Image 1: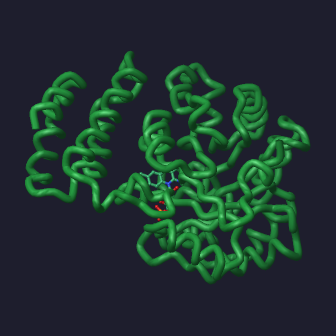
Image 2: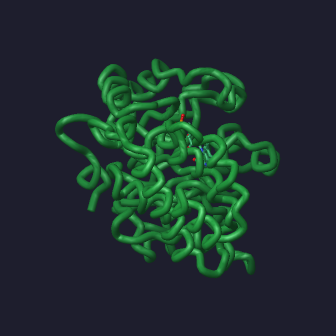
Length: 319
Ligand SMILES: Cc1cc2nc3c(=O)[nH]c(=O)nc-3n(C[C@H](O)[C@H](O)[C@H](O)COP(=O)(O)O)c2cc1C
């Protein structure tokens, strides 16, 4: 099925849960699918060179998903076009709804290795990767890219280049690589890329990303800048119901919040029985749920010192 027919709505933008490494795994995605589901999910980014190496087994949990987290796109990164080719074939066979290539991550080790946002300055390799991925999955399987406004400065030649590859979707995080996350996202610039799309590749869906904290804000930004979709990352840390038109989160009781965290911890324990994910990764979520009531900070400190799932569940039950 085409990506457009899977996600595009007649009454507003489609909402996407952003890929966030060590955060948006199958467990958290399932929690969000039951609070307020987005229209599209992404996996965390997975390295194609690692996947095609003896270290593969360790990376496979990042590609785990269940039918409740669909439609879902697998996000990959890496360097070797042959490994992109092999991985893209596998991703299609695994039942994903598309493949996305990360061309935006600004982390130093990754960039120094010529991957992710470093591709902005390497059009030859980018072209080769896109060609290999398309060759692997065929003309009908969705291929997308998530990138930024440019490397050191805003650079629309980059977006023109990407659009010339007739991607099914292009997600723009509205900052340059140099800006990291230090300045507000430039939504006008994302809007400009949507206009370029209209003339260069009208079938490419454009998704805007950066600093969206509420559903309403997302709807307004999409309308103002002519975007098809809105991707939300960190906003979900402040409201696990962000994808609902009317979020009930602020009015929820301490017990309801604790119950939601308990559900997350139980699902985490059940899913990662062989310690595929370390217990400390749960600490990232503690603040999402354990907040907004008297004593929350002290309770969080207690919970974050837990040494096992059972320990955590006992503490959560004793409140
Ligand atoms: C903890 C964390 C992990 C992230 N991991 C990824 C990733 O794996 N792939 C990716 O494309 N972006 C990743 N990002 C970037 C987000 O997807 C998003 O582009 C960025 O946070 C800006 O959007 P926001 O303001 O809605 O959070 C990550 C961001 C955070 C905070």
